[in-house]
Length: 287
Image (tube, rainbow, N blue to C red; front, side, top):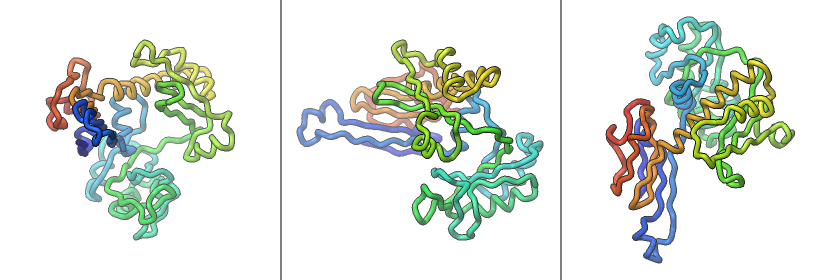
């Protein structure tokens, strides 16, 4: 049995056949489904709560909320704003809206008075990009954030790698929206760093973090040191997700991922219940 749920509840689920079903030849199959789609603002919330540096931001679902969030101290002092349509698709900045013809799912402005109009053009319309269906994806949320002057874009990803049977960190000094083209055009600019997991550590070795920041991202000096700290925080967050939020269930090998943040190893449970957790008692209520 599989279940779906809202992001305030479990967001990753997978199931395999139970041990009893394995005895039945008619049930020799495995079903798997995952709910791991995070919007950009949700990823930022996770990073913010795990000491990773991000810019200040707010999310709106109704146009009436724009004036309120612009008055909030998080954004009131911003010199420039970036407004982003929240859809699960890449290439938003190069996209367009189906109904209004409005160009760009990512817009910049220095004028606070322009923010509401941009949000209005995005909310409820369908954003079409190279990665969406031809009819586009409807925008239900828009993120308004403090714009940051970008001097250089870098690329970093933490993946599970079959060849090394564990996590691998992929880094490149040539980041941006077209990282796939970078990998094709100059594969030598993409660096892979397998992470040893023999000690089951949830924290990245500082030496490896420094190596990734130096060799992988091309940084040196204080920038390398600062980046290494951020990489360490990021790896700790991701390993926490994989190790502590995945809960094993004896009878049917069920796993679920909770979006809460106060969860600790002492709250780990392994029960024969076949029902998905639906109350805060299964995990913390934050996040």
